Length: 135
Image (cartoon, rainbow, N blue to C red; front, top):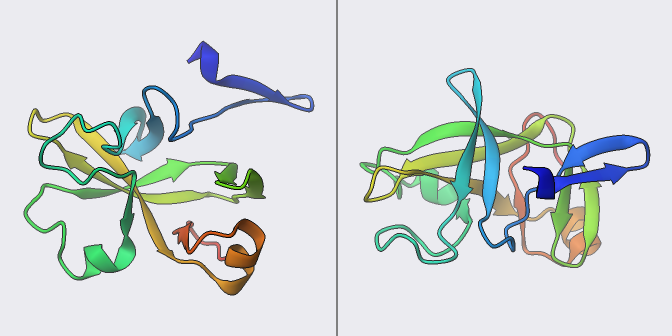
């Protein structure tokens, strides 16, 4: 965790980035803070999608049904989008935790189509589903 520690002004923070060698995310699961692998971008699993995100609509349509997936919360204060745009997160991000074929917990950040403002700000067509917040 030491390599994830940064200083923003006089505040210390931990950064979790999908482009890390071993991407992971902090999650709240059953009232406990845990660290889970973030997605399957490196292809560690043969059965899980090779991404770090899942669409909210895919979940609604039953795309994860039967996978053992459970909803989790990802605590976060700031988000970073591709163009290097940082944005404030008030509470956190919705996530989906699913076991891979070895039973290891893998977290996918839940996303939705970007709002006009978010797309203009970041250039991204998708944005994370934030907890009790809309950008």
